[in-house]
Image 1: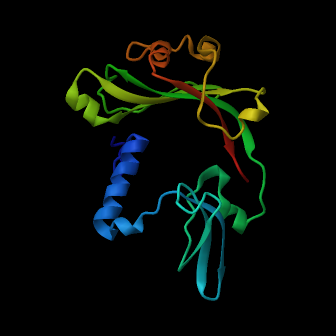
Image 2: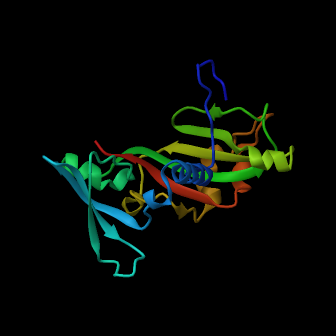
Length: 208
């Protein structure tokens, strides 16, 4: 999608992106540079450089085994539960922004020109929709794989859901009530949501 900037925006399925990155690392650095089953549990630095401590998973010596790796730098990309972040700043609980989100993937007829991201509604009720797979379109020009997120501003939330992002919606009809009137000539949002294989619900959270 080209919105007037020097570089266009690319939208891609997360699994596909991870596969592309995985293959690129193997091609450029070699298979021995990828280590799966390593969970960061601590990290730090000293005069000799940086270090990271990992809990080894799915290994022959037991899941409780640990391993320390010495390096020039440690780059943390370990998400909302980041142990790298905790090593740098004081640990803090997640902060809810007041927004609950529904998300899903839907195979559907391409909308508009098939290359458009659309954002519909105010911040209190907002839907973000965009295609993420050209492979699906190549197989059938009348079908697109669309990623969507529906956001609702609310004062009520479930504390048990604060740090979970993969919980399926139990009552879809109730959850999508704020979007029942989101019907347009180019996109029927309620139909899109109901046509998703799975619909997940999670809070928008951050840490200070």
